[in-house]
Amino acid sequence: KQEVTQIPAALSVPEGENLVLNCSFTDSAIYNLQWFRQDPGKGLTSLLLIQSSQREQTSGRLNASLDKSSGRSTLYIAASQPGDSATYLCAAPPGGSQGNLIFGKGTKLSVKP
Amino acid sequence: GAVVSQHPSRVICKSGTSVKIECRSLDFQATTMFWYRQFPKQSLMLMATSNEGSKATYEQGVEKDKFLINHASLTLSTLTVTSAHPEDSSFYICSAFVPGGSYGYTFGSGTRLTVV
Image (cartoon, rainbow over all chains, first blue to last red; front, side):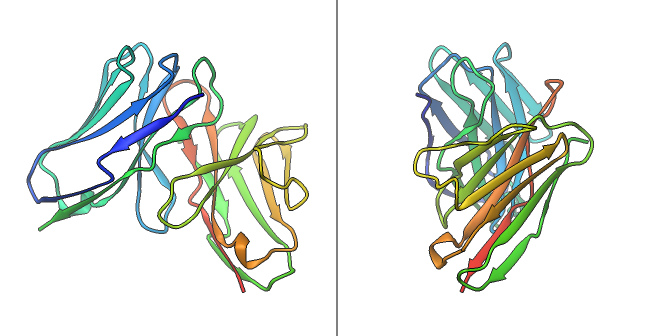
């Protein structure tokens, strides 16, 4: 059974700092892993999708890595801005399937001006 | 591209009434849609999986007679909360996997249901 864990649960950093959010998953036979952003009371915005054959994906100031062998993924945010403040969710489908996503509990990020 | 439109975004209803939430895939066909529920300060929990033209699959502990799911076409899935009670107040959100491998899963904007 796939379980997804995210640490830390909350993170507060000053503007401009680089930061790393961590995600671990128990079943490494995943087809892909996806990072999302959720603003309070809003839906999910997809940030990055990493296929199982990929080791990382980049979009602007965001870089996500995937290490299936260790069951870990990281989301790196460069030069953080107050607008990056949100909850970041990591999610993966059950191993060996492309069914529903299993979510971590998220990391609540606060970037202070 | 790869947008799922969800309506309404907010709804307040009286206890005992029913509420319908719609999710439409705008530029792709969604054979399968997933319905999640999110309680305050918690992550998303899968409620059910809806498949076009067949019965939905419900997760353990989710009452299928209370949460009616209909997936009548490749672009529309609906969730009806029947005889709503205050404990059904939550954030409901739908999702679909986008074929083609570039987008992964896309989510609707969510529906905040408040039952008074």
